[in-house]
Image (cartoon, rainbow, N blue to C red; front, side):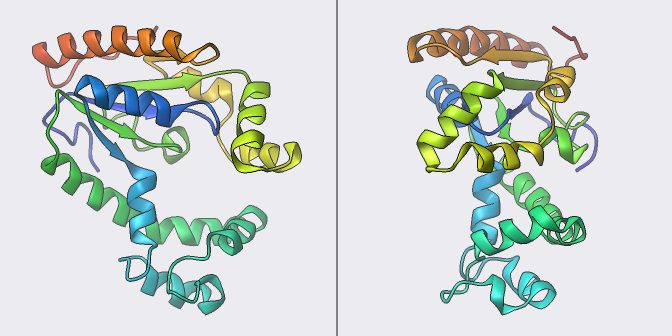
Length: 215
């Protein structure tokens, strides 16, 4: 991607594991935004017959494939957590394909504006200058751990290990143009998303590229 790669008003949505990115994306979709989830794109690329699988098999070997020919996510997760070089190798395969498919999806979808759900937006270093706004879904680290433990049946130590591979809460907030604090009931989240959607509609109506404005 290059700077301002999209002709439509665009938002990059991110947040740490367990923050509620998917919930916010779903609510924005109900409001009429076009959602493009880079995790879903990555899953398609690493499904049986996915565009990334031949390169992954060549680079890492068949031990990292399931019998059906998909990425063995558990094995790969363990590998990249303990091997920074392997993580870079996997990213070198996946990231260009994700960027390519993201552009295809952006041209295909319809909606009031584009929302790219990018869990590693801060870590990638590419998205800040690509989208018009960065929206961070935020909550306390303790709440992140509680939610992921309940959702994924992981231990607190396992969740902290995942969080350690992600940008810090402070780093995410430092690049945010907009922040939704997701630490209350669903109705509060719905109200916050609805208000932000109205703001994005106004921005989308006036310009496809708005000046950066920190909040």
